[in-house]
Image (cartoon, rainbow, N blue to C red; front, top):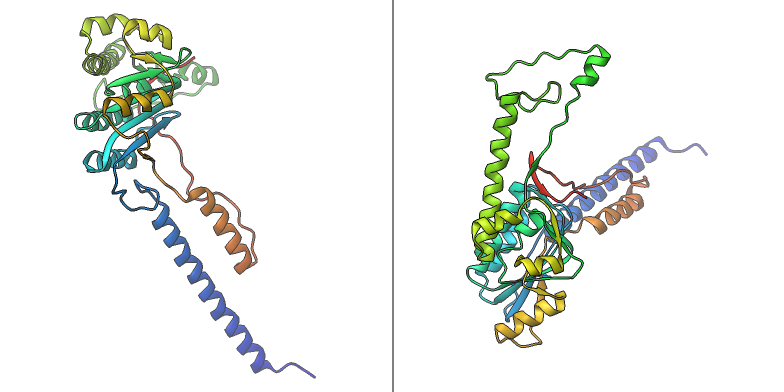
Length: 313
């Protein structure tokens, strides 16, 4: 028997309606997940009422945009139940502006509540910058720290362009506007100007260390030729206070603040649903739409500004 055309049209219409409802449900589910998993100070998004410590982990290259971390630090600063911070640093440094912003946020916290620092394998350059507001700095004997300095780099491919017979005209509003340029060599005036920028950023770095470590500026400047120091060397030079682990740092904080050894520690981090959200969305769309989920969702990168404070082995 031939199929009924009206019945076929009705079925097609129902399938389309069902597809619209399924897509709407998936969209609502995704929005709820993103809202719930974007970032929060405490595990379930609520405030921990009882006394506790917060632990801030800074790992990898420090980017220029760390606004969410700064918000969480400021929340902890004003949180009445937060008794102190364990700052765990394992970073070679990174953006000067990102390091400065983290340093200032940690310093605001340290002005009201104690901060103890535990350095991992490396806590150098901007990684050291963010550590100096701490009341006591712990490092392993093999930790690489220090590397107090600023670097600015710009590639120059003008020689290659000349070899290829390519010429680039550059129109600028002033002689310093095009400095540095990837297509033209750095002029002597441009080099002097940029060296002045680096020197000023370096002075700011030295001042941070001198204030945080309670050392004379000239003493810090003598140590700040860009070289890294091991934990043992840094201890002898006054750049750190003690050789020890994160457990030692926590024990020191508990003892000096007369806290209970059972005091809970809450990780102060940007909480994101992204890793499992990607898999969940892929699975749901595969089941509902019978389609393969490809590509990446909500990818994240590290942005660095022009001048960086980073240890480069």
